[in-house]
Image 1 (cartoon, rainbow, N blue to C red):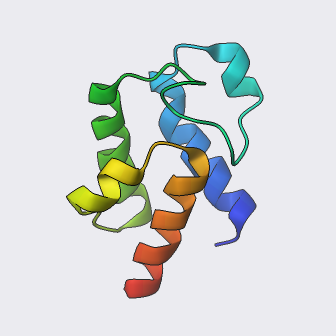
Image 2: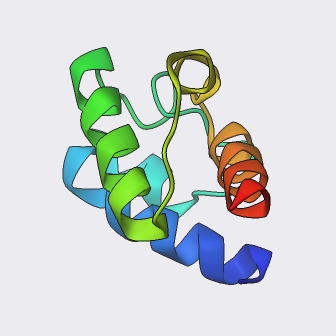
Image 3: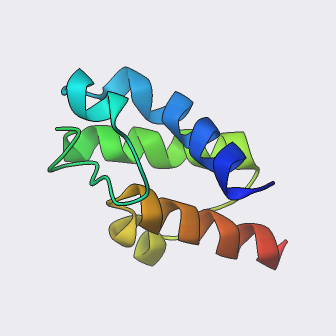
Amino acid sequence: MNREEAISKLKDIVKPYVKDQEAFEKLNESTDFINDLKINSANLVDIVLDVEEAFGIEIDNVSMEKMTSVDAALEIIDTKLAEK
């Protein structure tokens, strides 16, 4: 899976939790889930669970805490997919 496909899949996952639609329209690798998209921390847990299911990976607590931006999420997804 290339970077664009991963971003597209991630965008579909975060869409239901976004509070700032304008920021969502401009989503890119540097977008922060909490500060830019106004996603609360409880919903971040839901996003992690959705990412695990969509990509067929398991995200540990240490990685979960780092998953606060699109770039960090993609890095974690890439790492976990490589471990499979």
